[in-house]
Image (tube, rainbow, N blue to C red; front, side, top):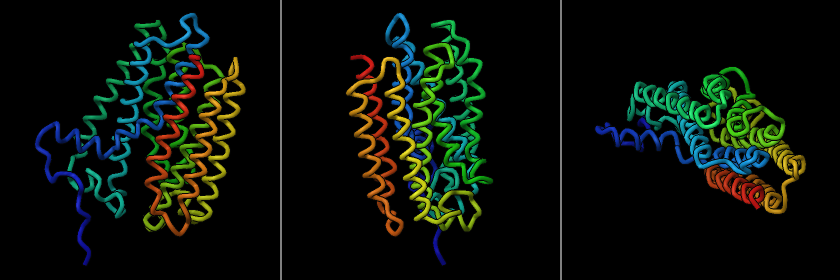
Length: 309
């Protein structure tokens, strides 16, 4: 007989502070860094054509609040909707809801608070700039973000839907700063979509056996781990191509610093694929968390520096 997985969280957190710490660890709040640098880069690109030449401190603050609130809400919804599946998967059975460390009600309450914070920040753009688009588009964006868990129940394109969810970050940031929906951020969105889908396919390889057993739709469960890794490589090649096109299609074209960032990102993606092998998934954590976090920070930082300089 096998014993139930031991939760890494306190058995029964008693204070709100403890609960929030458990929640933050469960949703890996630090992973907000994956999409935030792209939202900030898009903000600076959008503002570069405005009289100010760069976003204000107030605008950047609102973008950051929106990003943190939206990502936290999406992850809370993911944990709520996937709690049943998580309980069946040895890798995820120790998460806060299936292990009993936190209640579904707590996740719902956090989601309500995050929705309020997100919409308040959207309204902030109207107060600052008389830009109504963030308020009008806010709830549809949140609904799109929270729908991801349903996709894995009926389509193997769920990885690309997750990519599209993160890809909304540069588009929404552009709309919030510029007050219009234009073409330039869509190249960045395409790059983010393919980058995210590629690393999510790698991450899903860990759950191959569980996904096959429970009927979860994923690329590895359908085509096997080896073929899934090839699909991930092709998807990342598309992402790299779109990053190059973004730099060349910007007006004026982005310069040396940005393309150094693109080169470093491509090198890191190659490293990611060298680390993960069909018969050895032990380095998936390093590839998924560390390398992808560095990619977003490097691209965002060098891209913003390029715009400013």
